[in-house]
Image (cartoon, rainbow, N blue to C red):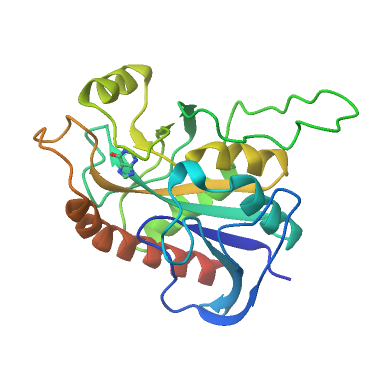
Length: 247
Ligand code: HPA
């Protein structure tokens, strides 16, 4: 039975080389996921794919139904989730195109439904989230980056912002002082919902641009993000193919 899912972000709404076996429409108690779950085979291994922003890339980060997405994966029997995410690079080691496997998160999002432990509780529940990503899955990703000949940052702190606008240079400077090494808009509540469902969850982040005010300080264009993601997602595809053949 398939136990690994890939959630694709901006730049990865489909998986090259995925032989699609079937598409599964799932309705959840939390509403509709971003789209049907795509069951398929990649490098001879069963995998499930879900495009976080929808297959037509139409759902903005603050409108994604993260609870339905994670619940649907859990319901399909998934135990491990690799979340692919485009980020802005804050740390010098994250120029456009670079990969990182973050080990920490700071959440700056607001107003997103972010827990399953809300209503109809028999007791108030606080889950541990000291280490938000699964170390075993992170180690696997790091090893497979190396095996694919790619140099990924092996740690990093993902700062999750609300979007859909990009940040100001001052916000990024503050996030840098907070310890964030990268910024993205979808890392939360995705990671915490995975933890609430006991899913092993890790993120493969791809730098799409220098975060606001970083690099040469120029303004950020969607065209630049899309261009950088073309090469960045090529690297991610190599890592995913490598990872699946290693299982
Ligand atoms: N900020 C937030 N999210 C992002 C960025 C950014 O600069 N680039 C890609 N996703």
